[in-house]
Amino acid sequence: MLQVFGKASSINVRKVLWTCAELQIAIEREDWGSGFRDTHTPEFIALNPNAMVPVINDQGFVLWESNTIIRYLANRDNALHLYPSAPRHRARIDQWIDWQATDLNKSWGYVFMSLVRKSAAHQDADALQQGFHQWVAHMTILEQQLQKTGAYVSGDEFSLADIPIGLSVNRWFETPLAHPDLPAVSAYYDRLNSRPGFRLYGRNGTP
Image (cartoon, rainbow, N blue to C red; front, side, top):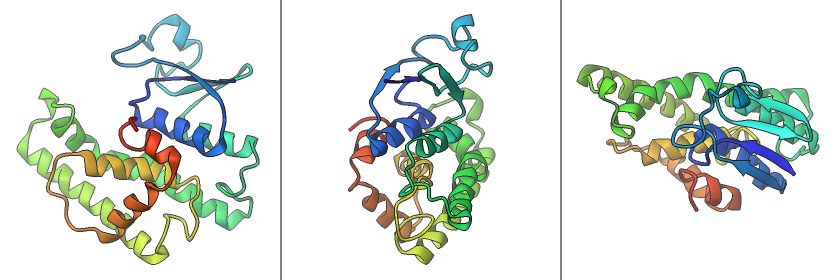
C-alpha cells in the first residue's frame, strides 16, 4: 500500500492522487498541511526537510516533490501510455510538466491568494491587475498549444503532463474572475471530465 502524506485539497497532493487513480495504485493517505497535522514537526521534517506536501512512502522509499513523485510512479509501473520512453516524446511531456510547475504556477499566485484565499497581504489593485494579465498570458500559451494538438497538451493522447496542467486549468475556472474566451482550453477541460481520476481529484479535490 502506497502511503501519501498531504491533504486532498492541495493541488500538488492531487497530482499524486490523480496519478494513482490513473495507474490504479492503492493508497493510504494521511492529512498533513494547513488545517491538519503540522508539517513543521520533527516527525514530518524527517520525511521532507522542506516541510511541504506531498510526500510518499513506497515500502520504505520516501520521496517528495509532486512532479518527481508522479514521474516515479509512472516509471515504477512502466506506464508507457502516460509517460513513453521515446526521448522526444518524453521530453515534450516533461516540458509541459515543468512549465506548469514554474511559469504557469507563478503567474496565478497573486490572483489566487487575493480572490480565493482572501489574503489581506494580496489586495493591492495594481498588483492584482498585473497578476491577472500574467495569468491570461500563460493561459493563452496553453490555448495555442491545445489548438495545435486538438486534444491534449503534449499531443493526441492523454499523458502525464495533463495531470498537473489539468489541475491548473481547474484552478483557472474555479477562481472568480472575468475569464477571456479560450475555446480550446474550455474544450480540454470538458474532455478531462471523461476521466474518473479527474472527476475524483480534478475539481478542487472533490467529486
